[in-house]
Image (cartoon, rainbow, N blue to C red):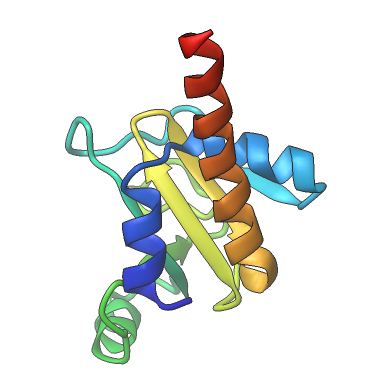
Length: 133
C-alpha cells in the first residue's frame, strides 16, 4: 500500500482500533509515550516512516524532506533527549508505518498492513452489529 491508501484507510479508524488489531493478529506494536500529543486537535495522520537521526544540524531534516515521497512522515531520532523538541522514542525504519491521532502515536511494521487495516475495520463492523442488537 502507498501513503495515500494507508491514509485513506486510517481516516475511518483510530489508534486504539489499530492497537487492538495488532494484538489480535499478534503483530509487534510500538507505542509512543503518552506525552507525545498532536499540535492540532482531532488531527489524524498515517503513512510510511521517513526516519532521520539528528546530529545537531537541521541540514539532515532538509535533506530528508527533499527525498521524501508525498505522505511520508518524518520521525526524528534525537538520541532519547527530552530537553529538545525533536525526540527519538523507538528504532524505526522505512519499513514501518506510523499512525497518529488524539489518542496516541503507534509504529507498526509494514509487512501485514492490509491484514491489519482489515482487522481494524472488522472491529468497527462488529461494534456496530452489537449496537443494533
